[in-house]
Image 1: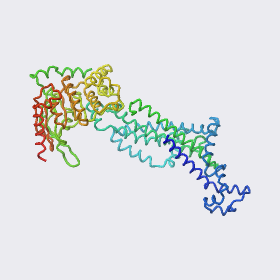
Image 2: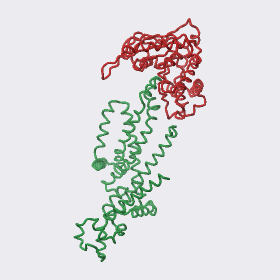
Image 3: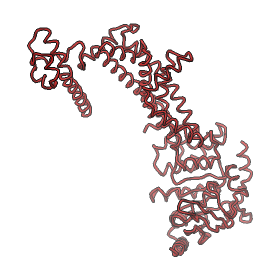
Image 4: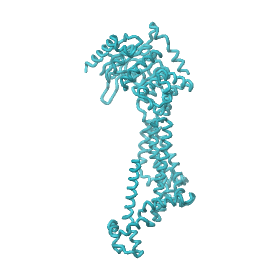
Length: 305
Length: 279
C-alpha cells in the first residue's frame, strides 16, 4: 500500500512536469493562433515575441495557458492528447486499418521477434564457442564488442542496401538489424553464465570423469539460466529498437518506425508521441513476458527461493 | 553395469575383518609437488611417503599451507605431482579417476540448487550411465545411509547446512567407489552438528568398509574418527608424524574423555606444535 502510494506519487510528478513543460513549449504557437483569431496578446507583434523567452511570454499571457494543452499540432503534446490518440488508434480503429497502431505494432513486432530469435540463437552459439575454445574467445569476442561501437543508425541503411542488392527485402533486413543489436547482450550474458560454475563444481565433475558435453548440459547450461534471462530482457528491448531503426531508412509504409517517420514529415507530433508510447508499451510487454517465462523456468528448475 | 561388477569384484568384503590380508590401496613414495606461481615456485609437498590400507580411516591434520588438501587432491588426480610416485588401487591416480575409484566430498556441499536432493545424488550416476531403475535403487540406499530418507524430493535450500553436507556425502557414495576422499567436509559446520556427523560418519564407515581419506584441522575430529592420523607441517608441506590409533573400532562419543583418546590427542598436538616450530 505504501509502495503503491510512492509509485503513484512518482507517476503524478512525471505527468505534472510534462503538463508544465507543455506551457512554455507551446506558448508561441498558441499566441500566434490567438493573434490571428483577433485576441489581444502581449506583445502584439509576432516579431517581438520571437525574441522573447517562453517563460516571459507565459507570464504576460496567462490567459493562454489552457490553450497550450489542446493544440492540434503542438510542439509538445499534453499527456491526455497522447492518451486519446493512443486510444483512438488502437481500440477504436479496426486492426486491419492502416491508421491502427496495433497494425503497425504487429508489423514491427514480427520483425522484432524474428530478429530476436536469430540474435539469441547466434548469441548462445557464439557464447558456447567462446567458453569452450580459447581461440574463439580471443578471435570472436573483440569483434562482437567492436560491432556494438558502430552507431546502428549509420549501419542500418548499409545493411538494407546490401541486402536489397542481393534481392533480400521485406521483413528480413529489419530482422537482421534487430538481431545485430540483440545478439550482443546474449553473448556477454551467456559467456558469464556458462563460466559461472566455480572451480569446485568443475573439480566435482572431473572426479566423476564427466566429459565436456555432460559438463555443459548438466552444469554450465543450468547455471547460466539466470544470466540468460537477464540478457534476453535487454536483448528483446534492443531488438525492438533495431526493428524500428530498420524501418526508418527504407521509408517503410508500415510499422512503428514508419509511423514515427510519417508523423515527423507532416508535423503530427501527437502521432509521433503515440507511436513512441506504443513502442515503449510493446517493449514493456515483451520484457514482462520474458520475466514471466523466467519465473516459470526457474520455478521448474526449483530455484525459486 | 560394467563398472559396478568390477568394483564389486575388487572389493573383498572380508578383508577388513581379517587382519592377515592387509592390502595397500594408496601408496605414495617420495612425492613432491611444486607450484609455479607469479611469486616464484611454492613447494607444496615435499618427500611424502605414505601407505594407506584397505578399510583405513586416515586423517590428515595440520595448519593451513601444510599441503593436506593438496595431497588429497593428488590422490584424486586433481593435482599432478612433480616428483615421486603415487598409486591408487595399483593404478596411477589419473587412471584411478577414470575408473571412478573414489568419491570426493568438498568443504562446501556444492549441491546443484536446480536439482532436488535425489536428483543431485543421481548426478554422478547419470554421468556414469547407470540405468534409471539402478539410479532409483542407489539413491534410496545412500539416502538411508546418511539418514536422509524422505528428503529426496526436497531442494538444497530447504535443508540445513549439516543435511546438505550429508547429501553431498550420499552423492559421493552413490556410485560405490571403495575410496572416499573428504576435504574438510564439516569445516563450515558448528560443533554440535559436527559431533553428530562424525558419529554418523563412523557408523557409515563401519557399514560400508570404505577406505577414507579425511582432511581436517580439528584435533578431536581427527582422533575420534581415524585409525591413522597423519600430522603434517607447512613450508614445505611434509609429513611430521604418523600415528596409528589404538582406539577400538567401536567409538561412542564419550570415548573422547578416555585417557587413551587424550593421549593420542596430546601426541597430535605436540606434533603440530613441533611442526610449527621452525617459523
